[in-house]
Length: 527
Image (cartoon, rainbow, N blue to C red; front, top):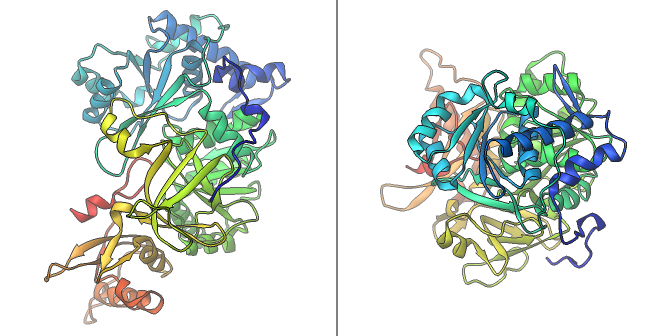
């Protein structure tokens, strides 16, 4: 599918110089939003005027601590206003913020500290047990800057001037990095330019979701990775809306509480959480008040159609599934409000191009499977310090996503699984996602992941790893409840799938291995 990329929204026509912080932070006071709430939490709020002052102070504090333009500063920070202050303060000062997952262990953090060659690590004190030994193990001399009011970097912020002239940067200069969580291997540094965030906001947040100044955005996905960074920070700031933050681990209870009390209009989740929320909804007598919501969005993993239908039946709301990546910064294929095909990832977001490429390197036609490649205004210019990976992944401006897809005749994209997760059974390629989606239609199944496994003859067949909605209950003198359910699930799959696709083995698990962003790590199930 091709789109006309010659029509560029007016707000994406940059001058010779452009510092993203000037648009996301500084302009709001001049446009009359100084007293409007920019950030809302359960116990506190931050207005746009307060945000602008604190961003300037954070930028001045970093400069005062010896950081200079172009230096990297890692951020191991929970979802709180200080994340905004230091992220935008660094960008405004010309320093490059690098948010990383606060779930990483000291060993992996030491790798990121050394790999990024950062000068400092700003961190929430809750994460000191991993950050402090990570800094010591890295042995780079990077400073640890704890977000504490007494004896920490917040003292420097409080003493810094509340005015800061934005560093002179160009649209194509690097503004910040992210580290990809990855489903295998060590994380990779992914630089993004000043122009990349506006592209995701204008093309997707405004162009697809229709977000505006009256919207209040709440993301269960956290700020430290690309999906949450857009949902809960750049999207609301771009349109002059309100970002809703909750630093707690997202569960059905915490998300429903946040929706009821802070009244977001747009909610961003992941399939795993939607499944858990549905389970909670089905178990309560008094459902939570979700009436403030007009949008529900999902990404991170493909959304099974059964989850879509059950959520809509329970809440009256559609879930807009889409696919994005750290390299592209946010969603580039998506369903849209009032234009949803359940079980599909949607259609190409204007501002991007997408194609499906077969094993022979030729572009696939409708109905033909292949690897998804995309390009657009927000894709990374390349990886940090990984030339061999960059050469394989970014070719002539096209980003090879590693996802296997089929596009139908009407331009809807259908996920088949990761390219390296596809299973060849009896000489025929089959999609693990199709099997997983069928398993999740069974009322006993909460989550499922399917991988290939060799049988006694060395032939590969599907193996399903299943998380149940409720624990199995054994009855004395009766056949094993686990064996009975396995047989029932196999029959359930055989009823709706081609015969060769049913799982030959079913393993029950308490949970599935996942990355910090909620993606299932199928390689761990294969080991």
